[in-house]
View 1 (cartoon, rainbow, N blue to C red):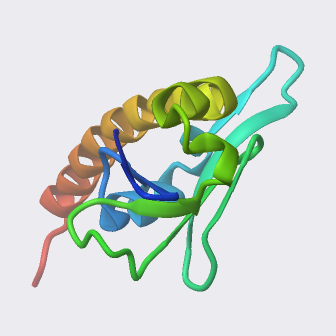
View 2: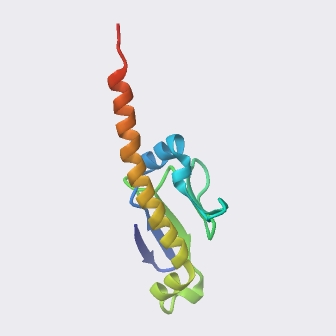
Length: 128
């Protein structure tokens, strides 16, 4: 993940593309959430066609992302963040960014599994 700031805006660029996010959402959606020991969802990431969102509960990435190669989200920052932006982001969004990093690892592993499974299935199909 990369976090960039410009004036009063923060852009989070994930380590996965929208294509990868949609693939995992379709084939292994459980990988996109973090749950507690009781199975309660703590944080989730999902693709969206229409509206991006960012909260303590999760992130929705929009498919028409400004960064074509990676899923990204743009978040306006309040004026209070201007004095020391990096520290403000770490203090206020640190847990969200940490959760996103875990989801990124899950997405990477899931894509490898999905691609291998698809290749195995394709290889087992006989055409006449």
